[in-house]
Image (cartoon, rainbow, N blue to C red):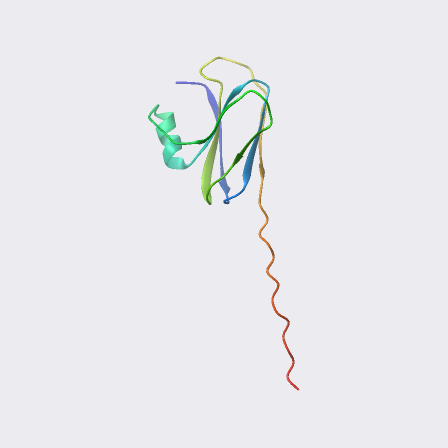
Length: 102
C-alpha cells in the first residue's frame, strides 16, 4: 500500500484546504466513500492533484466530512507537512428592528 498521510474534517461548501509540504506530492480531497475506495486501491473521485509548489489550495464543493490525503506516490520520504483550513464565514443577516406601535 502506498504511504500517505490523511486528515478528516467537517467542512462547509467553499471552505479551502491548505497543504504545505516539503516535497512534491499528490494532495487529494475526498469524501468518506471515495477515501474508502482510495484505501482499497479502487477507482475514486477527488479534488486536487499533483503539486510541486506550495501552499496547495483546494476548495471544498459541498458540506460534509472531507478527507485530505498527502500521497508521495509510493516513495519513502521523510516529509514535513501541515494541513489547515480557511473556513468561509456565514454572512450575518440583519434582522429588521422592531417597530413600536404608538
